[in-house]
Image 1 (cartoon, rainbow, N blue to C red):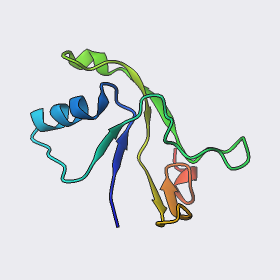
Image 2: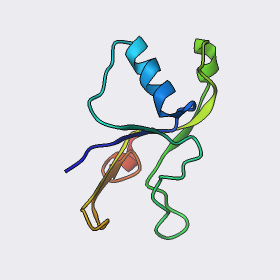
Image 3: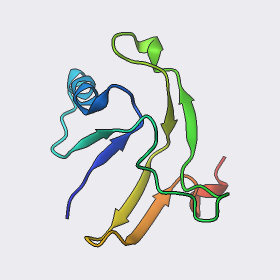
Image 4: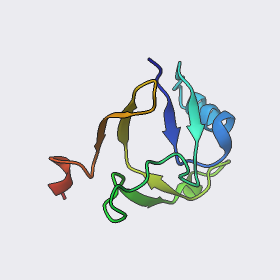
Amino acid sequence: MALHAITAETGGAPEVKKRLADRDTVLSYPVHSDPEHKLLLPDKDGETSLYVTKQQNASKFGGSYTDYIMVQPALVVVNKKGALQQVWSWNTPPLDTVK
């Protein structure tokens, strides 16, 4: 089993890891920077997305931070063959009804 963290934050994986380390957060698993959202699962029916997105005005923090479209936390579990085992997000029941 392997755990990977994927963020929509810009700058590439080394820059994201540096920002985390600057905040005393060190992860022992791979971190991927995906500001173009290429690693998101496609919508099943072309209409309903697993993901909830929000504009993140990160440039207000200065340094190397830039604004980006943040993807709210989600969990996607796939097996070694790439088959979907489990999904969870703010857009899946019962959280999909929370305002």
